[in-house]
Length: 349
Image 1 (tube, rainbow, N blue to C red):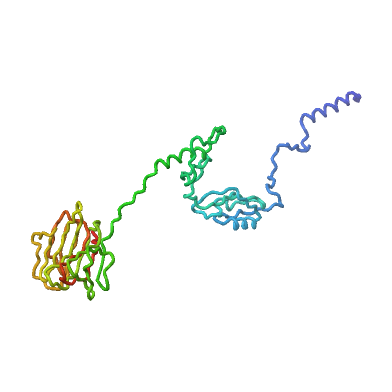
Image 2 (cartoon, rainbow, N blue to C red):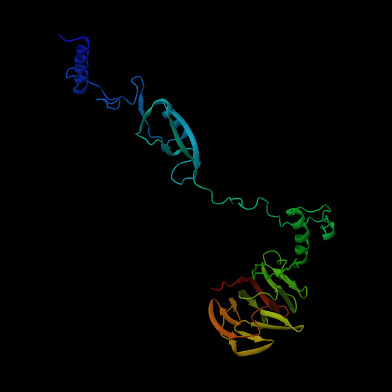
């Protein structure tokens, strides 16, 4: 029969064997690092989600209303110019439309300022000092002389007002130009039908003219002019109704050279006309076989004079000394009736 010590050794041996081999029926030990068989939920069961609506191109009021209707927070974070999106409408949004977010999430938007203005200059990034006005000093206020500048010690950046006043005022006064008034050139245009009295533009050398039954006549040798020496490129005409003596003159063009009057005239008779320069008959300047009454007209185109009788050309001459001048009428004694004196400008193409 084993002793107490032997029994103790046997029990110790059995326990040591079981500790080394392990028990097949013992509980399974699970490592703390083992992965669970199913993942936990990322959103709690009591949370709700919504889809972000499309806010682009909506105006700010409509966009805010739509976002808040979906349970989202509307937030305008920026603005910029756009040529395609109307002013106060949405250009961009974040998150974009169609994104799933939790209720209460913020939707950030960028608002359009409309097209960028082109006629308003932007201020310079390097200088905030306005440009000096170039306006001259008003009359009555003496210009600021160089010695009139402020006496306090100038700072590192002198003021624009002091600098511009001291330099611009003398410059404007020194460069002022005298006023030039050009000599006006009157338009060769005049009409007198002698119905009632003479037109006031006539310049008469004497007072021997008379208006009889709506026509012009003279009591003795008489001359009168109209226009001035700036007249050129015009047409003048008159009706010769009747003559008693063989001459009644249409003074076509006249001007003074060294205080001496030079003229071209047409002497009109009962059956002929003659074209004269300073009283001398021009070559082939006699036109015969005319029948009263008739209308004589002349165009002065540059230095080319063309004579018409009843609108039919009868003579043409080039006179370089006669491209400008006034016009008029002359009669010898009680020798005829004239009517419808007309001057019209020629419109040269």
